[in-house]
Length: 285
Image (cartoon, rainbow, N blue to C red; front, side, top):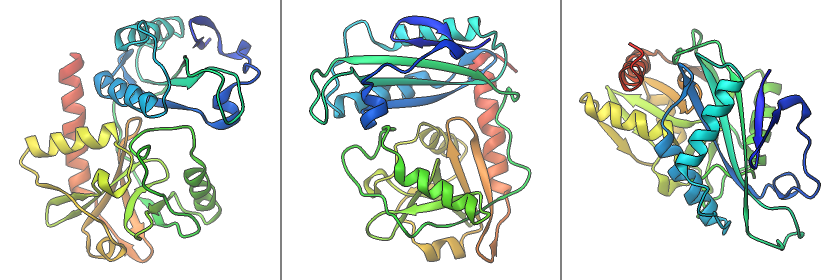
């Protein structure tokens, strides 16, 4: 049985009911983090919590003194143990504005919600078949001060994912208002050319991905050059490789963009380095 923590109350997942007036439900008024679990332990927590609380601050949600990283870690580990997740899994932590009001909230106090679920894999696994992608044209992402955070206003990405499935694609790449490619519907973007990594900078309006940051750091530590710069559609056609990163999947390589085909030499190497890093950090090796 899986369990959730609804603002301090632990209960079975099946018995959880949405609170009337939930601002997360009515207005997408909150932020969240998706966190990978290895060996029954959530990983990369410092970076996740930093982004979570900065996102809440950007939304003017007031965080009480007790609601800090150590508190959330304790509650996550409690749910993982109750849910008997001893190997791989995922956790979602939300911080939302408390119920009340319409577009204008009655209060700015924070409430939290944590849920966990098991995954079969106890390490990051590179996809066997490369993803098929294209550029999504009906909607663009607008850069704002909220762009780096995982807010609950995700309709552009939802529509991109829906339309990708309708067209038999694995994902769509999203552009900003300047036409630069900044991310996919659920991941940050990297391209590889002559062994060098290129990824959109945060000033382009992409999400400040936790896995993006980790992959950049691991690449630099292993003498792989990384540049943050604008990515244009023609850069996809001249690239040797494309891969996507997020906290749950790690790295996924792209096999095709329209008629262009790609290999996965660099993404495969980085995935091995990524797993070696976490095996060492968690003592799983």
